[in-house]
Length: 102
Length: 437
Image (cartoon, rainbow over the protein chains, first blue to last red):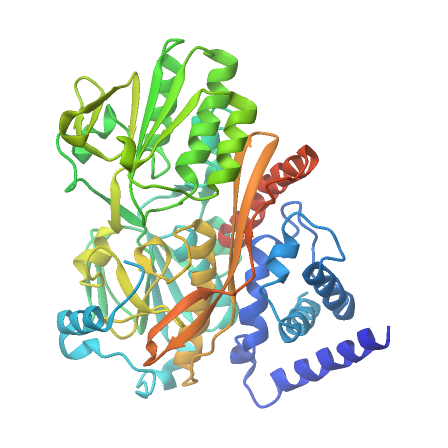
């Protein structure tokens, strides 16, 4: 749980960094956006389809779930294979970015 | 041509002349005009429609024009389900209403007749000349008949390719419906690279599913111009499990490398006439190349378009980005999902470039589901990152993140196959919403 809280704080730190000193229009094309928008292909942000909707998902829980897919402790049909392609930093950025979508 | 050698790069530079050497060190004079810059996107398929939508998402002040000849776009993915008879054309039809009304993209229904990379203009069949600051080209594929005797594109009414969805899909469907029980469906499949690597093998399964219900004495022969194929083990065990010996796969070394087609007699001929395969329905999927508009603009070197694989900016013409099946994208397959990802990569790169920022690299993904029956699906996934080469971006490539992705497990239970079939439909709904919704 402590780890999750730390990651949550890390996520906030990332989001603050992302917004500092960059104009609003460009802020959206920082790395977090570039990593996370690829998730939208399956996890539609308007609720279409049958994959879990991740808009507004708690960032720390998203990070935990991605880690569990990656280490195999959460069973999956495909997310385990996908999670293996990403780092912890990616998971934190995904959690942070999904948290910013309205 | 997946590997881009130094020699080939020099060739690319030669073709493009002075404008060929593309570097992001070069400060862009357009950067200041970022706010009201005009970005034109050519082609409203998976790559182009995504790029247009995400350009507006990443930079709402941009003027974005999407030029696409058709009012309705039929996705290639899902078209095998129509061929097999358990989906309708309406199920794979997409329109541009949301791009215009929800996302502020100007959609122009027209055909591009020429690109002038020096003047930065695009000409259309409708007589318009439009100026761009940045151009995204997502032209898809065109077919080649230069490696085959006896057949041209003009024969595709009687021998359909059905490799661009639309009328061709329906021609093949009607031919299969008219075929008598006990008939032979022959599919000729090109060598790599080509659009949708698992597509032919899903098509075989979908046709087998239809035959099994309606015409159980029929047979399917795949004549393949290669020695192995995508998700091969999973396809072959799935075919066996559901359709017994109905599907026969013939690799290039055993007569699959078709050299001639006798259109009048629906016969495919290989090994200098040694093998003849007589069909009742013949589906010839030709070899492919980058779509005509890219070829005409000199964006292709050989059959495909070399790009900086970090940004998808053309290595021939500065300010033009080539995405989707037409591009050379390293380890990324020519799929709708890859095109969707590349549309986002190019959109981010264009917006950053217009703002005078250095390009950034981030992982992108491909996921591809194939149905073996409507309740049995298999998948392949991959996460791809840009890996700089010895000369940084010039010889850098999109590579698979080691250990990531791969295919569904060979020993998965039926419940997993069924779950993946449910996710197949979810994937279709999700990605089409992401692109056109």
